[in-house]
Length: 71
Image (tube, rainbow, N blue to C red; front, top):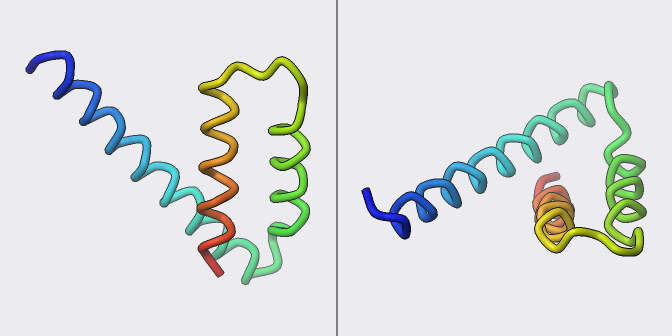
């Protein structure tokens, strides 16, 4: 497996984990176990912190987008 194939596989795995996390939060919110709105607000505040590592910022923004899509 070359470097590009490894990175593509890693990206796919990350996307699957993001989707699973968003679905889990959605299920927990429906069960009344987690406040989805508060979690999203917390993630938004974290992503707004200054001097954020670009990869971390991207991950936080992707999680927020996933959470917005899952109801």
